[in-house]
Structure formats: structure tokens, C-alpha cells
Image: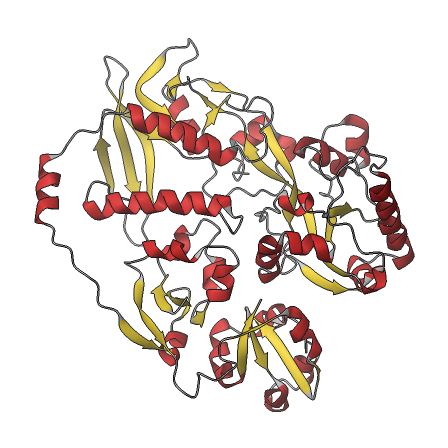
Length: 536
């Protein structure tokens, strides 16, 4: 896709297809529902469906769903750090390592299958990705956002706490991770991680040219507060807590290596090298940490996605696709092959399972009359009132959507949507997605965003760059970014109940973290009159 976010486009494409089936009545999606066991034929051992229970607040219901075919697509187990988990059984030394896997990644599908005698393979093979972002607002959170390989591909370099490079940044995930963990003395000697050791963190640094090359990703990570922009080497060194002369030596050596075409670690491709004038170069930096990223192990399947027992025979009626299945990637997975596995085996399994035509469903489709949803005008003032997690409206490309329910389904997590509640989120959305992705949100759309004449000033749709924001950095000219929007706080600071200094000290910067320590997001509604535009 043109925006470079292949994963998001694939997932939304799949979701769109599923929702079409849902609208037709051919698919029923049951959320907040947990499968507790697989139903089997006592004579043949064939899987006949599932038993489930609902997990909705205030109520619980148990039931059965019967079908001649059941497909496991439950993901891996890297997020489950409980006692007795697969992680504790097979790789206990990794129990304290953060992970990119979502809360769903608890090995439920493996447990369901092995209860029927399914075989497992490569359960100890867990990929550690070298670069997971450390969120400065929540550094101890065990769940991390992945810093994509593209960040190093466009020229990002890795720097340790001594201000030095230590590897070929374009090496394999296993190689780069090994170089990172080797900063721990015990690992360096034994090549086994000590679970009592502190996981080392590093700096991922991009030059201005590298950042431009990976602009879509840089904009996304900067918007999330995971990347920061620094004017000149001194500012970068201060953020890193490094001696500027040591850091200068590192960059000068890298520039020299690039000119000669190789470095001491065998790197031979040099993109996005910093400009010669390091003091006037613009850098982007963020803190990264090794993270559990993918489980190569899982239930054993054949080339058709049938789940197998230890003797090699299949369990009739039981299939698996995606990370729940093991043995597809061997000891370690190549970058980019995760969604490939899901789509390939999902397609194989989906095509081989016969779908029984349901006469009553066909009759229902014949009776359905297309109805066009009438959209109404939504004033900006009304949009701003729906600014909580429980009531989350967001404007995107001129339309207002109720994303309250969808937020929990968002592949990148609910937070990035909740951050935009009650606001125009077009700039944040466009940094990641193509506009046509919203075509599938017919059920969520409420109407058209209407801006009054007073609101429709030249600046109402103004997009503010970080460079522009940073120029308004005094008490007499005080702009502050909060949750993706920029506000002129010059006059408001004088009336601030907590005193003007709490505002002026973040003048010309992103003050979201400071704001969140004291206020709730809904308080931003008081700043409508001084809003300038979206930070890009």
C-alpha cells in the first residue's frame, strides 16, 4: 500500500470481508465469549464443535456450538506469564521479558487441542525481536509496540548506554538481539538469559534523511510519543544522557564507515547517514528494548492445516492456522512472514472446508431490502462532548464516527483511538491509513462534521509541524501540543489555577505527559477557543 502499513491494510481487508458476511447473516461474531472445551464424538474422536461461556459483565452464560469443522486461530502464548503457562514451562528465563503480543496471546488454542491428544512442536522456540518501543509515559508496561524493521532499514542506528554502536543494524533479528543481550555479563558468558537480570535498553536514532525516508512510520511513532525530535547533536546527547564528544565520535566513525562501504561488523549498506554538520542535523530518537515477538511452536499440522496427533494421524474436524500452529517456520521466523502464514494457511483451511448452503439464510437475503443510512450534520461542539472511552466519537475526513465499540477491536489497541475521542483525528489517521479504509464503517458513521463560521477560520484546519510548534516557546508566545492538537496557551496560562509556570515550562513542546499527570482528557474541551490545529 502507498502508506507502507501493509499489516494494517491486510487486517482491515480481512475484517471488511468478515463484516460483509456478518451483515448478510452468514456469520455470527460472539465477543466476550470464551471457548472452554472442544466437543467430540466418543466413538470416532472427531471434533463436533465447542463449548463456551460468555464473559460479559454482570452475566454469564454457557452453551454449545456444533459444527463438523472447527478452526483454531487463537495465536501464540507469549503474553501469558502466569505460573504453569507455556512460557513458564518451556522458556522460564524469558518470563520477565516484555512482549509485543496482545493480551489474547495465552495459548488457549494449544491447550484445547492437546486436551484431545494433539501433538505439539517447537514449543521452546520463541522469537525475541530486538526493537520494541519503551513508552516514556509508561516504561514498565510489559506490553510493547513494535519498532518496525523499516526504522533500521532506512538508516536508523542502535546506540548503547556507552554512546557506542555495537552491531550491524541490518542483521537478522536473532543476530541483533544476541548483540543486545550480550551487554549483560551472564548472557555474554553463557549465551542464556538470566531471568533475574534487568533487560537492557538502547537508543534507536535516525538522521533527518532517514526520518524522511520512513516518514509514515516516523509520524506514527512521533504521534504516539515513542519518538522524539532533536535539533543538533547536543540535544540528542542530553536526551540520551551521553557525553556529546563520545556520541560525536560514534557518528563521525559511522560517516567514515559509510564512505568506505563497510564497518567492523560487516555492514555494507548505508542509508540515511547523518549530515556532516552534526550540530545542525535533525535527529529522531527513541528508547527500545528486546521483546518477545512470536512463538514458532504450537500444535502440529500437516500441509492442509489438519491438526495431528503424536502418531501422525489427524484429529477429524479440527484445523489450525496462524501462530497457534507450530513447525511452519523452524527454529526462527523470517521477518514479514507472520501475516503471510496466517493468510496462506487461513486460505488453505478455508477453501477445503465445505460450506453448507442454508436455505433459511438464502430466503432471508432475498427479503432484505437495501436501506441507505441517512447522515445528519454534527456540530463540532457536539463532537467534543463525546470524549470518553465509554462514549468515543472521532471525526475523520469530514465524517463523524462512533468508535466506542470498535476501539476494543482496533488491531493497534484502543488507546490510539481513545486519544482522539471528541476530536478531529484526520491527521493521526492519515499518518497510518488510507482514506478508503473508512468505507467499511457504515454502521459507525453518524454524520458530517459541521464547523460554524467562527470555527471555520484559516487556522481551524491548520496542521502544525513540530518545527512550527517549537518556535512558539516563550511565555509571551506559548503554544503547547496536547493529545495530537496544538493550543495557543499564551493568555490561558495567566489564568491557569495551578499557575502559569506549569504551562510555560512546556511551551513549544508536546505537553501531553505533563497534562495527563494532572488532568483528564475531557478537560481539553475548555481549550476549544485557543485550539490552532493538529500536530503532524
